[in-house]
Amino acid sequence: MERIWYIKYAPTRIEEFLGNKSQLMKVIEWLKHPKPGKGLLLYGPPGTGKTLSVYLAARTLKMQVIETNASDVRDVEKIKQMASGVGKQKTLFLPNHVILFDEVDGIGGLEERGSIAEIARFIKESRFPVVLTANDAYTNKLRPLLPYCELLKFNKVPIREIYARLKYIAMKEGLEIDEKALKFIADKSNGDVRGAINDLQLLAQTKKHITYEDAINTLGYREYDKEIFEVLPVIFKTLSFKNAMFLASQLNIDFDLLFEWIRENISIEYKDPEDVAKAYYYLARGDLFRKRIMKRQYWRYIVYAQALAIGGVAVAKKQKYPGFTRYQYPLKIRLMKQKKEERDAMKEEMKDLAKKLHASSKKIKDEYSYLLEKLKN
Image (cartoon, rainbow, N blue to C red; front, side):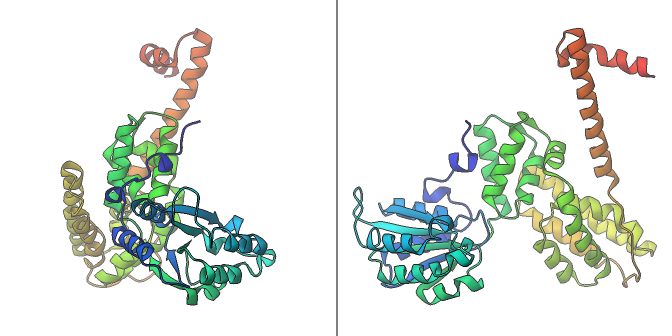
């Protein structure tokens, strides 16, 4: 069975760690000098390196990690056994160890009543450092733990770092993948490294050459539609550059897709020819930066591209246009989807003919597709 890529390509050195490097260094420093009776609670979105940082820090300090997750600590008696075992005794292989409670916010339910309180007691009594991870440190169920923990927040990993890691993995796996497809996967991840690598592996299961269309069609348009219809009215109705940029930054929307939606709907929303011309001017300037990004791989230009294409279009109008606007699906994306469906239908037809003619699908496509098209017409 093929290994999961996010495990296969997990960083083994501090230099390879993505995003939250300052948090990683704080974990190392905390493990060097843990405070008696205190644990360290790492919290933040999934795929930002919380659990990985503990393992890298422990490796750096030659410590062993004793890990348990939410499903392992639902039984209060098991936690008590841990407290009398690994909480007080040294391990066989290494003189020091760190105890990791992973995904503690996954604990819940009546059958687990008392588990959080027992973990708090464990922290107070443990002779060794205790680290916990959670997506949300301030959920009600974790409140009893907070007085016994120092909190360290992990942030979403920058898209440019995720893109670079995806490109490295693609190269190691021998994938031929369009730059635009890699960028789409990185943008779609919303700062989740693990999610981005999983998406890349999903695409690689079907083919070794991956196009932008493959990425969009496999990973889906639909999950973006709701968010796009939330952000478009803000961009087109607000007169505030700041409001338009803020909302766009909060949503998990691929910038290239959002760009097409804006391009398609400027002339539908704006009625004044001067507003339309000004909006398309800003959009075109933003498109220049998009092209330079793809040509030079200079990702800092993305800031200018987004500012012009989103904020610039928002402030291009002299006044707000009242009333409801029915935004149209971008023609370019509709055509891409239609072409994909046509190619899929043709592939199925070629497979059927290949069986009947005892030839490969490739041979049918190369030598008979023109004749078949003529027969249809």
